[in-house]
Figure (cartoon, rainbow, N blue to C red):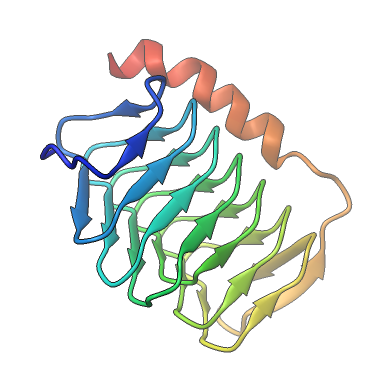
Length: 162
């Protein structure tokens, strides 16, 4: 990771050697977040603000292609190969493998975006929603487990990664 003087990365953030913070704008990352190898966070046209206790797995990509600040809340799990371009992501969400959230979309709190599901521009995923399958079907989550699952991974991974 290149030295980026305008970034604000909390000292507790675990940034692996092959993860990348890129772009011309500042990136802020809150405490206890983990960036796996090959994770890319790219502030291309505007700043990115990431909350605390987030987990970004291998080959996940976060891109801000707008002049607005992209905000990602707390306790989010971004699994392998997931891509996020939306500027508004709430807290306690799971973005499963190879899922994608387009620029112009938004995701609330306590949501699950299923494997390989694409949330299109202009679409808003309301709080407590699971989006799954090729037809992007939706249902309401009745049991909130996302925060506990992410916290469990955040506690175990530093011992395995470093």
